[in-house]
Image 1: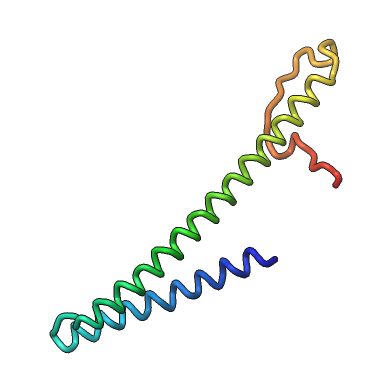
Image 2: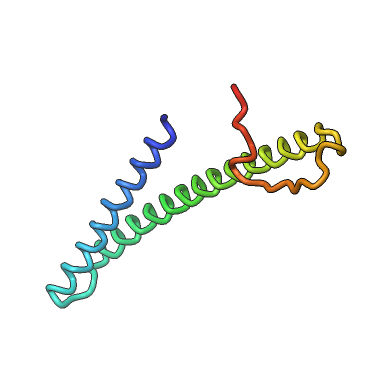
Length: 108
């Protein structure tokens, strides 16, 4: 449960930081001025943190997607094993179609 909680916190932090960036830009637009040197440094720091969070969230998405691929591969292997365990003479006229319905979840 710790993983999703951390990702949620990261997403919330990202939204907070984006709000800060938008506020900084809006202030300069309202005052019709450019960033001061201090504001440029602050903006760059916040943007760096946002990019870091984005990289972390992207990595988590990729890991999640890879987990799904591994699950599908395992299911496909189980289906192939099942098909190979049934004698050929009992398979005459049958076409094996791979779908979620054809693979029973294993009892763990």
